[in-house]
Picture 1: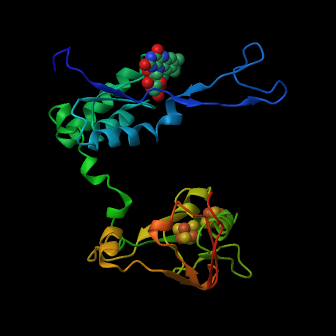
Picture 2 (picture 1 turned 30 degrees about the horizontal axis):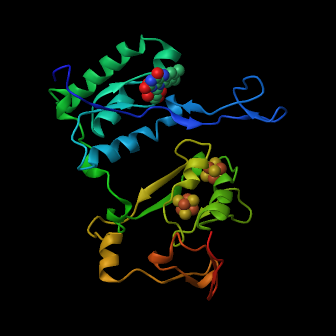
Picture 3 (picture 1 turned 135 degrees about the vertical axis):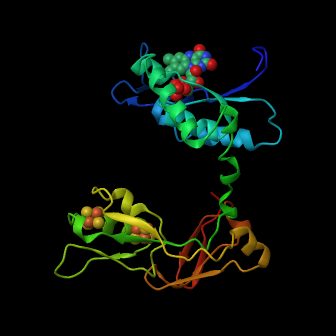
Length: 267
Ligand SMILES: Cc1cc2nc3c(=O)[nH]c(=O)nc-3n(C[C@H](O)[C@H](O)[C@H](O)COP(=O)(O)O)c2cc1C
Ligand code: SF4
Ligand code: SF4
């Protein structure tokens, strides 16, 4: 590419306040009694930058090469940016933190990856993941995964029980006389929260259960008019949970009670 070719570079830092001095009542860093916002960057923005990059790379109006920036520390981070549409990458925070030496590791890792995947130039991989990063409405709802607790590994902390009971789908029950919880398969939606809170590696896996023969997306269900209007789950609060129509979402806040819908008014 000729050096003068215009490019889009993203992301820059994200405005942030990392803390407030609770004695002098100003945001950090305090400058003569007052503060201002800072710029979030490095590892903290790693999940944010690739999403913004993907949005730009998929946008039909963006016709410039994109340079991926934000949270890149190693070759794998660089590859992820490239697969999401970056034809070059830039590093700021990691170079400040670890020094320019990280570029050597990054280059050798990148080269090894390209050889393994049979990519001859970087352009063989630019944007390769973009067709597979879709809106949630396009994902296959027939893809079914369920949590599985591997009994030999557990330490009986029951963090998974609390997470699922209070924060997910009430799909884990405690068993009298045992510290090993059990999955209630009918309730498990495969959200993965239990495995994220479990302190033991691979103690909970979330495994595929469907046979791969069926495919239906939320978009297809919407078009077919088969979106459920009630959610009948005895354990999750009783039958006849009311599900708001998509048009109402975001306009009103609803509280669902068995058999009753309460509109709490505009936010
Ligand atoms: C100390 C510091 C100074 C920066 N100065 C600039 C700047 O002058 N102009 C600019 O466009 N971006 C600036 N940035 C943003 C970086 O170029 C980069 O977009 C951002 O930090 C995200 O990349 P990173 O996660 O690799 O740090 C700065 C970032 C840091 C941490
Ligand atoms: S969080 Fe993990 S270790 Fe703790 S009880 Fe659940 S499965 Fe066992
Ligand atoms: S995957 Fe989700 S719903 Fe299933 S047991 Fe774990 S936390 Fe509960």
